[in-house]
Length: 177
Image 1 (cartoon, rainbow, N blue to C red):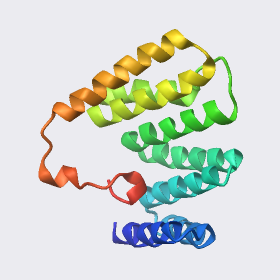
Image 2 (image 1 turned 90 degrees about the horizontal axis):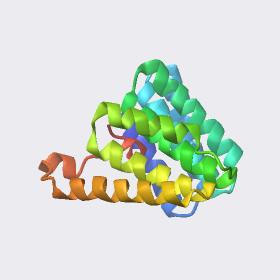
Image 3 (image 1 turned 60 degrees about the horizontal axis):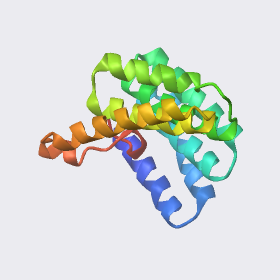
Image 4 (image 1 turned 180 degrees about the vertical axis):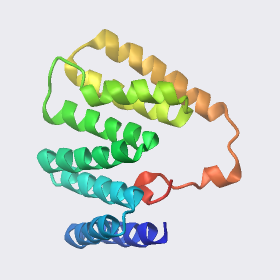
């Protein structure tokens, strides 16, 4: 956990300073250490950050490859929350980089898993991502349906009173759980 936070904060600091190469090196180091020390969650976090850096650099192939690596780690470790988060990223990247008339498989699977897990935050995020992806398919009826479901899921979240510790909880990409 501390190792993940250390390298995540280091990488984010470099990103904020617009030094993407140093950020990449920090996340790569976390990735290597996570493999060496058998820390799957740290590996997932590192791969997610590396994927987002690749996406920001307009390299969708590398972004997808990094996300698929993270998904494999999450699946092997039974980390269902991470599978949903990674699936939402894969869905959006696939829809934008490789437009199709079909919904991205990863997004459909992420939404199904989010529904099964019954976690409102994951459901809201996956609905939103799939709505964004559906926009690129040209299926306006489905986009409208998902937009309404996403709106309702986010509204339900805003109606909940969250414990103080959850209000400041990091997400996978910030290095927390």
